[in-house]
Length: 301
Image (cartoon, rainbow, N blue to C red):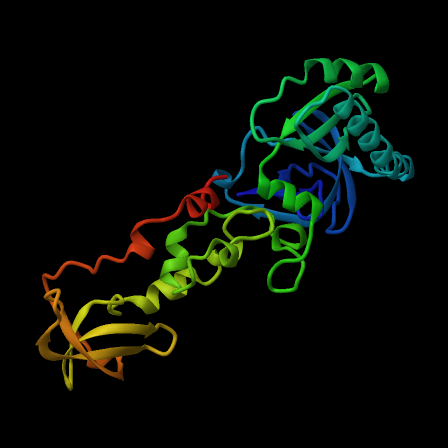
């Protein structure tokens, strides 16, 4: 076990572990820490605690000191200069006619570098832009391209649920999200209903996926042939949370195309009352098997 403190550099950013050394650090303290890009100003979100050695990326950087009044003032000055820096950069972007969207700007604590975050459809040749920015700010310049999810996290907004975006309010790490999760939860595959304002699959699809996966075990698929207490039928719909299966019974007759003719009445059975037919292929469901280009795009990030 090793003693660490957890530090965040942004309110909803990742938590990084640092070695507190002999400094008595508590949750809520503002600290100056040593990072790969120099000294940085951060907020302690996890007081001194012990974690397993394998959970730490070594070598572990140190907490240099608890932030003093000068450190806090310097950090506040950097925050106050962000708006002017964004405006100047936007002016130069338009001057060079670059197809890029500025998202955020960040000053390093030592005032040696300024980082501009942007989104773009492809690669951008911003060499001339960097030269002009360096001349304007007299600092080292870094332009960092981010994805659509990172943009939403930085800018914030309101989700379909009417609350603030998870990524911008409390979610520190993005979890992998797939279209399979929407299928498991019987959600509509309409991209407009399962995508967030970032244009990607909603992060909240992940939250209940494990529960749905467990409850779905033994449930038949829509269109699957099953045996019920009232006879053979085909699954019309399922309610995973209630464990109910809606079935249309087979009449024993055939349609003109050779398919089994089904009764118009829909019967509801418990999952325990249904017996699945062994050895049958799963029904072809074009909605599930043939994803549209829009849905494929949602999965890219």
